[in-house]
Length: 176
Length: 428
Image (tube, rainbow over all chains, first blue to last red; front, side, top):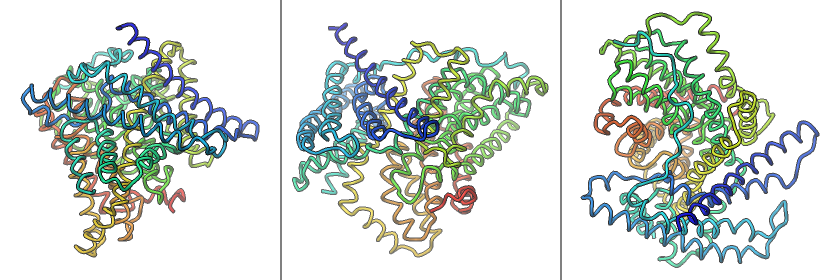
């Protein structure tokens, strides 16, 4: 189970990193083409946009794990411990219910857009719309696996950033 | 319906549900309970909210700054700032201000600054004998310069919420207020340093040290010029500027041999996740904001304000006070997305210049990042520096006063916001 979770998280991370790398390459290459070769790719902007939307929604679960979804914890900090935990569980339920609705309506939205075409690439509109149900589904899995740690605020932090420890030479003669 | 929306919003927010979800939950629930609007409209709003090419500047500026940090350029900027102003009274405090202004040119977010260079200078200040709470407070205050000096993620999002301004115009408008913020914080630091007898480093940096540190920092120092120059020269759009800046940082990383393949992968993952936490808010705020407009809340509010006064300056002060109060309780980005379509039309109705209003709002809500109870930058600094929120909140007061003075100036003198964009012909 543990290792399955790790594979899932790693695959999710790879997918969103790849999406970001792709939009970067597409937009940058398009700039180079415009100035270097006087041409540009008609599909570039739209494709990059759809990839960005996919990446943003697909990374929501990872943002939850890292604790980078901003929330106001001020009230929770004053509440007695037991009550605060209960409130955080209620929050988990609310997020879960919302994402389940997003999965459901997102799916209907895909069906709704299926027979329409996008402007530039002329694929089915349903395809980019899939970002919503896919993102919601991924988030729900993350939430299921991570709920306990979310409630305990035991987030997955980054490995410490590089070379933080070597700022300047000893601050000779600073202050008193 | 308006009651359901607002009630659920306040309830979720107070109970610690993440802000993006707070807006999504209250919006969708209001639609479902009321039953008059097709829920698919909600999906459409969420999708359309982030279906924007200009918005793509956000991931690119995040990526560029992550890459620059991975190249070790934060340290280079720090050395340069230290050689430049380290010898003045309260030297490290001025270094703190200076490095934040320099870092603001490669980063568009206050949190990145707080967690990066500001946190490093804070540790240095503490080692050098500055009071820990003051070191923390100054680091928090200087971090707020990040989103004022271009590039700025807040301004990219602002331009999407208000069609009367452009990203380029906003970037230019931010330059003077950003410099003023730096000056005001330096002044405040001088005042504190005199009172507490914080000295600078023993001797002035030699010309060789200054020159050497400048050369190492140069790759980072020219980045804002690439971005602004490219946008102003009409060479590329702000989004493309972000991509070019990322490519530039990537190129530097390979040149300096600071970016391994594994490191690079982590940088992309980090940037993607940070982007997500920003864009989720934008997407959900798009649903929430649409409902506010649908319920005619901005119009009602505008009519109410119009009934109070006719005077332009009074209106601006009223709006500023309102935004300041919102900024105490709501995080900067969501507050910006919600308030821009609500307050913007009021400002327009009274003939306030859109760039002037934009700077007032951005500066105002950015200052909200260092005000308790909801001050995200304060939280970051308190966590990194293991400081108590109470002592940090107290130590930040004189610096807060300095920033509010700048806000007052920006409100009273529209030219601070409009002069630079007008000079470059970027007003609409």
